[in-house]
Amino acid sequence: MAGEVQDNVWPLPKFYFSVKLGDDSSVNFQEVDGLNSETQVIEYRHGNSPIFYPIKMPGLGKVGNVTMRKGTFVNDNKFWDWYNEIKMNTIKRRTVVVNLLDEVGAPKMVWTLNNAWPTKITGTDLKSEGNEVAVESIEIAFETLTVAAP
Image 1 (cartoon, rainbow, N blue to C red):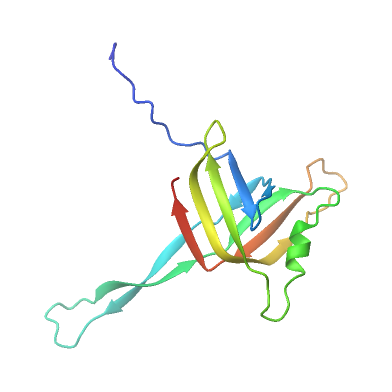
Image 2: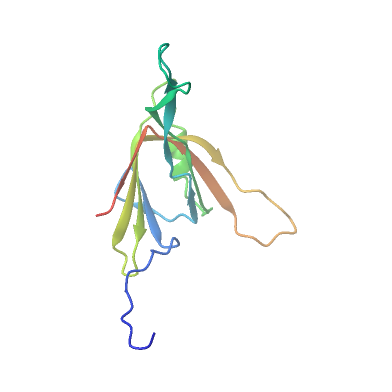
């Protein structure tokens, strides 16, 4: 209706974000996928329950792997250097921080991946008839995910 006051609260756009791979330097990614967490379900029914259905209880938490994609640049071997640190059960684990930013660049949502390490690196595909940018991806395993709004 005319003269109505509009609420100035809008959802954040998802295209403005930053990623820190364990140190204070920011890495420019094109895409971050897999920021999810779930709780497994435990079903239980004791023998003399009058209800013929099991009860459901929360069980262990579970997180998936996060996949990040970025352009391939000359002399940028950060992924490969980190990946090459993997030895038998002795990987340097890092804290990876993903910030969703507002229009002035201030973080509004923060995802923290604790004890993260690379499980897979995928180089770009090569096509002699293509005209796309070379994009590489890294898949990161981690133990816990915390989400905060600063």
